[in-house]
Amino acid sequence: MPRLTIDTPTGPFTLIERDGAITAAHWGEDDGDDETPLLAMAAAQVAEYFAGTRRVFDLPLRIEASAAQQAACAAMAAIPMGETQTYGEIARDLKVSAQAMGQLCGHNPIPLIVPCHRVLGASGLGGFSAPEGVETKVWLLKHERAGGLLI
Image (tube, rainbow, N blue to C red; front, side, top):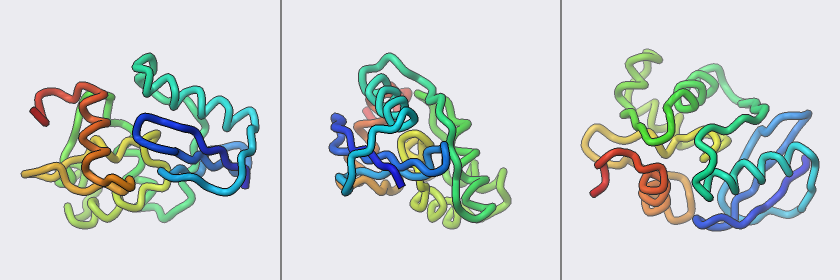
């Protein structure tokens, strides 16, 4: 599968493409630097996001996972930049437990682009799968000016 690692303010970020769609992404470097047109477009959009000039990603995505994971990713993708929801709020809509929603967030195959960082615990930030964990989540939420949630 073609993959491209780019530098971001939150560390190296790898984008993965399969059959004309972004199917995965993760923080950290990965073997391979394939610059397909889609990966180049995705890299440009991620750079624009970090530059503060992009609020919405416009990329073909495919969540290659269970129906529950697909539903959770669709719910996360619907949260606008600068806003947040709780695990419990989304869980209620999906008819799963808040704990299950937390696990689905943790298994988001396309973090950042599918903004799992915009999902918080009822009484705290919750976790985050980036190497720096919650610190990266806080950085992203501050970057998005997500209300007065953090300070």
